[in-house]
Length: 140
Image: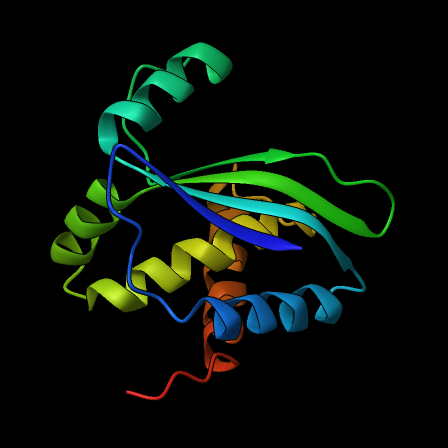
């Protein structure tokens, strides 16, 4: 089950059913099934608080993923700062929605076992994000 929540900020206007179906397809590509996935959209202050409290990092970020997966069933809480998504879309000159979808799938890729700690892993992660984004069908 995939759920969408918001904290300190309005829920983004996204096609939730299409996003959920897309997430399931991407997970299946990695041999995974969907368990309990909670997307929590928040502001920069909330993500900074989480980053400090749980990861001991004192900086803003676009996404923090807590992995509760067991075997081939992925589960987790995925916190996404819409403030940082917006500033990143401006910084990288991309559409806000595209940046948001990239971050949404980034969390799923982490739950599927993909990492981005090293520059090489980060490069592979970007490629996998792009591959996943090509599978997303949103009618504009």
